[in-house]
Length: 253
Image 1 (tube, rainbow, N blue to C red):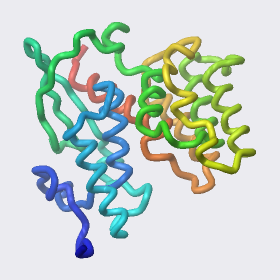
Image 2: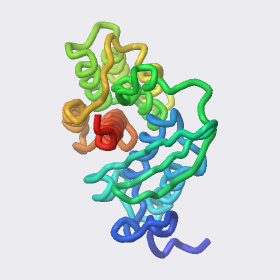
Image 3: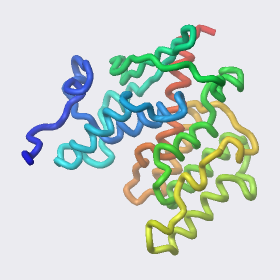
């Protein structure tokens, strides 16, 4: 098997032009796109941008071209966006990194409206972002940084301290038990704590940049490497806030 001689770049897998096309596909970008797809579409679509990016980023990582938590400045500074245009029986999905469209495809319209529509289409909530983290990084054992981020998210959703028996308390308990458990397979995972998080929150609210700052800060302060986990709690809340901001910028109302 021949060794990979150069990184897989965005221009190799998408019709990427300019600065984006020249950049190597990185794991943090792929995790952000995965979180965004999960938040907006309810799952990661096969053959969509996230799966393509994940495959390329994995190969780049194995070849030593990118670090485990490396991301591009374009995705980090300008964000990742997913928009939907509805036509009879179908929806047109457009996925972008910064101002560059990387994927555009159609899919069958869901039989039931997404949960954000049920809430008045105000935006993606913190609870929905936590559920996205359960899907995107669900197999990650809960640690202190996850627990801190979940607690910060719950506080901002409820606009008060965490509730006894709530999702924040469950995350804290999981982190405590995991710290005493040696085998990774026996540890409590994010999916165990965050699945159906919206139903476990006393109150919920739309994710905004203001909430992101608190959640990211909590996760970073409690992580030994002072970073957030790709596709984890902070990344998913940040993806939701960016998508909400993008929707608001397109809607003059």
